[in-house]
Image (tube, rainbow over all chains, first blue to last red; front, side, top):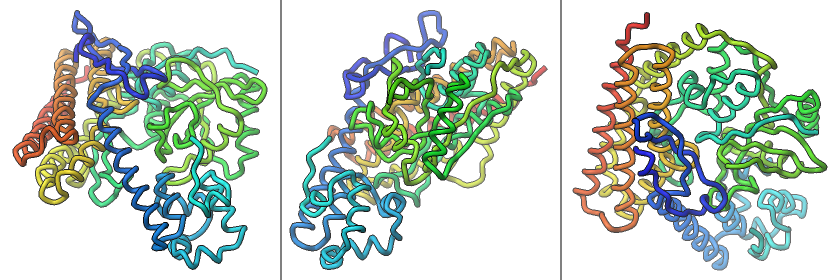
Amino acid sequence: MKKEDVPQDMGSLGKVTREVVYAKDNSGKYVTELSTGWEVKTKALDVAWKDIEERVNAARQKVLNNEASPLLFFMEYRLMDLSILADYTGFWQWQIKRHLKPDVFAQLSDKKLQKYAEAFNVSVNDLKTLNVNES
Amino acid sequence: MKVDFQHRQSAHCESGVTSSLLQHAGLDQITEPLAFGIGSGLFYAYIPLIKINNGPAIAFRTMPGLIFKRTCKALHIPLIRKKFSSRQEAEAYLQQALNEGKPVGCQVGVYYLSYFPREYRFHFNAHNLIVFGKEEDNYLISDPIMETPTFLTSYELERVRFAKGALAPKGQIYYPVDNVSVDNETIKTAIKKGIRFNTSQMLRIPGWFAGVRGIKYTGGRIKKWRDNLGVQKAGSYLAQLVRMQEEIGTGGGGFRYMYAAFLEEAQQWWPVDELQEVSEEFTKAGDLWRTAAVQAAGIYKGRLGSQADFDQMGDYLIEVSEIEKKAFQQLEKIKWA
């Protein structure tokens, strides 16, 4: 790629920092050039977040239908799978699977709820009420 | 306390941290491409059975941590590398290193990395940055992908150093010892070894899903994605491929441009014509990776979507595989004087 062909499409990263790209100058030597972004990968990132949004919405609906506990919603919201959540909370994966059932979740001790709340970076109350209000 | 440290922006976090720390230790010759090449950073793998963020697990570079390790080893630079089970110990150790005037590399997770844009914060635990001081409660951070130095509060730094999940950093810190001097012969040998190892890694790694064969395999799989996954999911998979290939930290073209830059630089150390020729081949490979990315974008934006479009996408990767295979075979034949 030539230096003048390095894309300069503004993306969400470009607003915070430009990134280094290796490209060739006029004499054919490699130099570094700063780029504000490339539309092709901005779109790729958009696709990823659109997929996440769909998963979060589907999870929210399941919780509202009483088919899953709020844990499912927060797992999708925080992009966590069972193994990541198990690592953050110290629970076993089979325990988390149980806690994903609404009736089991309803009987969890405050101590256990606190562990989940910390992992998701929300308050216990928000955890129970599906409330998210921070960045 | 603040270490006298010059922030250097680079394309990739690990090769950037490696070259910055080595330059700080007195090795001005070690540029980012040189660190990347000596550390045999170029790679490819597509592991079909593993999913990352509900998409394919694809890597364009070698396992995290290896670039720093291999580069220091090849240059015979003693290094210190430590993981911690206790957060207090991890911070105390970091403070002590800073007190002794040493900037240190830290492995961190990006999910809670506050200065990253939210769109970039996934549970990815193999990011690298340099801590070079502390003012009040703020640690001074030189993150190689950022244009300028930044900072994290002690709480924020602890949280990213102890991120959980795959490749959990466990507070890992690492740095080379001070005032190293490396003679030119050692650097030359390190370059040769780095190229040789990278060559065998890409040409001869066992299995069909890694190295140049892995690229060809991915090309073949992509042609089936439309039928097997449906256009929409196939589009999401392609978007993930493009992100791994082009997102922050690759220098463009899935690290292929950086490798081309390395080979060009290597020729200054080894006056062998092939190095420049093969460098051109990697530039070609990088360009073709990016052409493939544009094709992929056509699919995930919904502009393209026929089987012929997927076939074309797959064929691009098969062509890349051929280019890289020939390039590495040419590197293999070099007669190092």
